[in-house]
Image 1 (cartoon, rainbow, N blue to C red):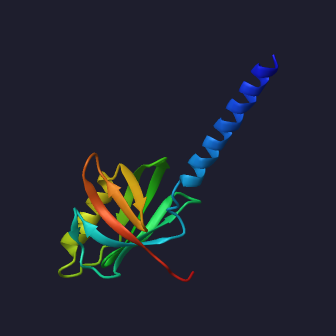
Image 2: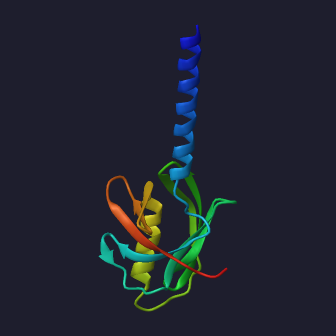
Image 3: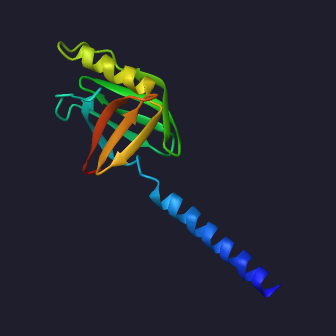
Length: 139
């Protein structure tokens, strides 16, 4: 009976440690500005003009797609990430509209994400769609 209790307590302890490690490993998307580096594995060449910021409280993003402001709702479960109700302002900016449309299209296609070495990777079903870098900003 004593051995049984030790086994049960050990199992509870290790399962508790596992749950703690899983939550500790969950990357933080919110309260960080993510600057666009690449689209479809090609440099975006937009400097600091294109970025997104996640608001964890209301599950929304806001940012810029080079010229226009963008906004959307997002759903996050583990490494699964999707965007809904994506919208933008409607200014015309010569030479930037194709890139802006591609950013929005890629956000619509996003299904999962990964963060490595300060970079945020957004993937569709299989393909890498968008790459962002974490930017330190003063709030």
